[in-house]
Amino acid sequence: MADVFPADVRSRMMAGIRSTNTKPELLLRRGLHARGLRFRLHDRSLPGTPDLVFASRRAVVQAQGCFWHGHDCHLFKWPKTRDEFWRAKIARNRAVDARAEAALHDAGWRVAVVWECALKGRTRLNHGDMLDTLATWIRGTDMRIDIRGLDVTLEER
Image 1 (cartoon, rainbow, N blue to C red):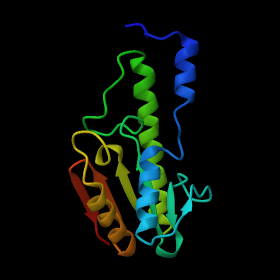
Image 2 (cartoon, helix red, strand yellow; image 1 turned 90 degrees about the vertical axis):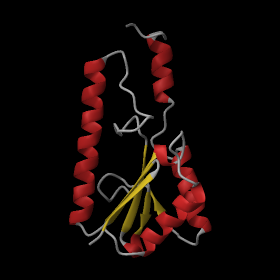
Image 3 (cartoon, one colour; image 1 turned 120 degrees about the vertical axis):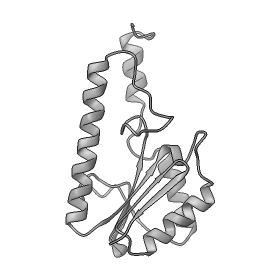
């Protein structure tokens, strides 16, 4: 199936997709700041350049887009065109995420992943409750939290 947009239009559309300061990331930043938490943004000295870094608590938060990171939820659908390209691209993204998270854990950092489906769509969580859960995790000692639509998974020490 051919793309419905000419190549130059598709290129311009794809170039407009942000990697930082996304709507989900801004929602997390506003909510956590309102809960008294202070953080650094996009620390390039850390593996994977985490979205939010809570240095004094040795915790990082990643806001992951379900499409770009191949999440198994209703927001992710394989594109119908250029199948080979997209499967390789998303597999690479997943591999980079796994390596970055392993390097963060090895360096003693705790990792939170907040998926886009937790913030929008039919499986979204109540934003206030989700932010309270995330703030509690940041102040705690659990090594990892995975917040996805209708689900929160904690991993203890």
